[in-house]
Image (cartoon, rainbow, N blue to C red; front, side, top):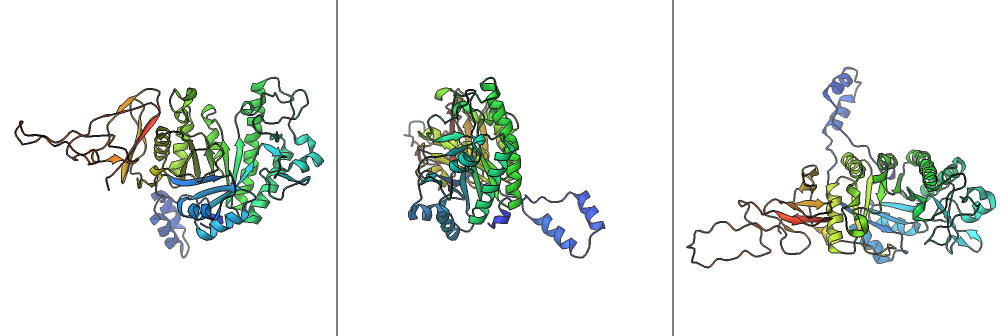
Length: 446
């Protein structure tokens, strides 16, 4: 896809009143243009595309060949420009975004080389440049100390609320992304709370709550400034937004410049004992609205350590299926592997209805070649699937239907249907007991 049309506006048929108004004042050639717009098909709500958050280590030639075949979107570190250009050559339709962090500067080896900032940084502002020219851009706690992120050595919190820092970050990153030929940027750490990285209280605030408010307000303004700059440059700006279920409207506001990423999609609350956190608050409804428009990327990651997490993540993403909804499992914490789930090759096809919620909390959606269900609640619930479908993950049928009544004498031996055979479509399937925080992906038998 050409870079200038990375996030094309969805074409909608004109309302009849608007058509009449336009026709009345139309000049030569306008009629043909209107006809083309009216006949343009709406974007297809296809099953979630696959994408790769490839920031763990430099990709190998084999990784790039595989990525060009499998993925619709790839995120790479900013120093991997050669790999980005190779992907574009292998697959001109692929979108390749550069990783950049919004909230930190870093001085670990690689980010600083021989006492100088690296040419291509994982951040927008280099540590050495900030140290020499703008030490005031380092955030400090109430004791005047710089804030190093816990668990991430040599990552330093920056003053994301400072207009000068915001402008400098925006100018540096937009220039780099445009000159190098990236399709846009994945902007990490658009976070909701400093507590994930530090217990520090920011200078000028009285407590953790005020600290978090200062950060959120700063990032809101930051996103508006940098998002507008990326839009004018014809590039996508996709922040990694955290905990938007806690702040109504935040997902919508922060995804409006090209999309957003949810790094904990389908995450189970209460240390793995509750329901799916994504469905709480307003986040899921805001994601549904964005997916339906099909104008920006939804980049979804589910941390999968079990088949259940894999099913729940993919099925939840399928509920949000749209023209630019992409999902990936994550089997490692450092994203060192190109990821793939067998469910991504299940061939669900195109969604033929909107996701719907049943009275017991289960969500379902039907596709041209299958059906998905998700139980986001913290208790087992019952759901009845359509007839004639088989499990997409290779397990035996999850939704067996009773055999049709036999005309043979009752004394004749019955033949039990194969676990891999589809149930007769004329017989209603039996309800399935779907465990808490689990999903079903059923497809037509091949």
